[in-house]
Length: 350
Image (cartoon, rainbow, N blue to C red; front, side):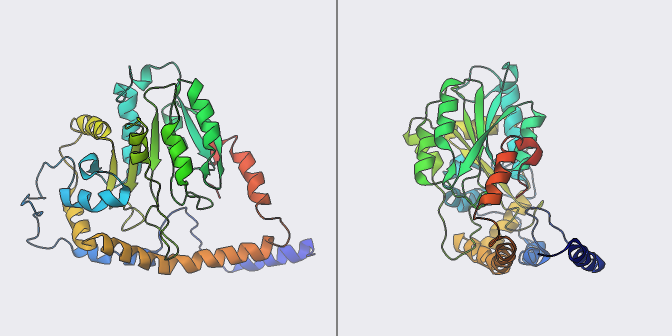
């Protein structure tokens, strides 16, 4: 076993190297941003009309470019007419969805969420700190529920929402959720779709941030929760969010919101008082850059070539340092027991 002096010497050696390490969660490396460099020269002079002849430089087109919505709709498992292509960040759309629900309520509800004496959300933990921050900002009480190998503990969720009408929604990252890359199984998704809720206006805020971010050639499919909810008689249960933030340029991409026809109409109606239309020039450049679904997959394969070795290196280092001394999952299980009691403070530290 190393002595304290040995550990201090090792620490001083690392500190003396004056390394600059950016450990920001989810921030693409420069090499990944370089993959989208061609966007900076698109759409190019004289290319300002979509396939319908619409001048993208002008006002209008509240739903976003039809071709871009048609491109991403099957990838996100939402009908094109129920998918809106909007601003640069899905977090903005999540915030606005909560704000709309807070001020005006949602389809199926009897009054605005802000008029309810208590609002509560199911928060699978570990989870995303910004989801929890939104709950804090709106005064929504958070109910931590543990994450299992196939997604959140759906039986615990079903038991809670069946008897408590103050539970208005839940957060869910369906594919490759941090920290373990957990994917919600079809069985778990179906349980969320079929469970009965005491609140008639219950919503699953489905943050499908990583649906296309595969680290192997095998593409893990996302459970089609929108369709499942429709088949279960709860068509308006899901509000789906996604973006190109970790596909092209964070802060300069395209974000999507969608779900059922009623949810899309609800969002569109309130958005129409807030906006005359999104940045269609940016949407056109993304459309020209990707071209089709195969183009998106090829682009994500290039991301994988950069990321997969980094994941492997981190996994090897952690396994070498902790694998022989800590039983598999022991440290993570201990850490998760802590963060489950304090989701807003700790969020997604792993």
